Image (cartoon, rainbow, N blue to C red; front, side, top):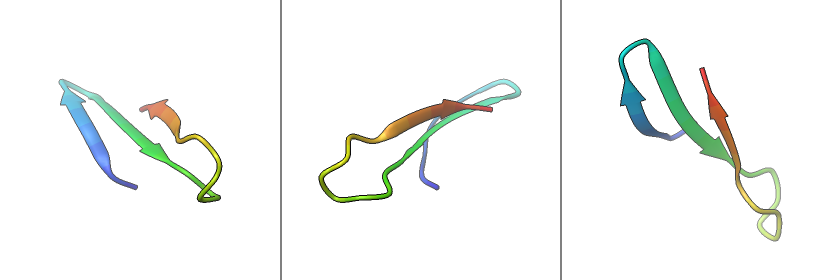
Length: 28
């Protein structure tokens, strides 16, 4: 999953299952 932002212990990334589906953003 591509990481788009790393801030301290948190990592914000997105993924998309389908080409026509908007990306889901997750924060770990």
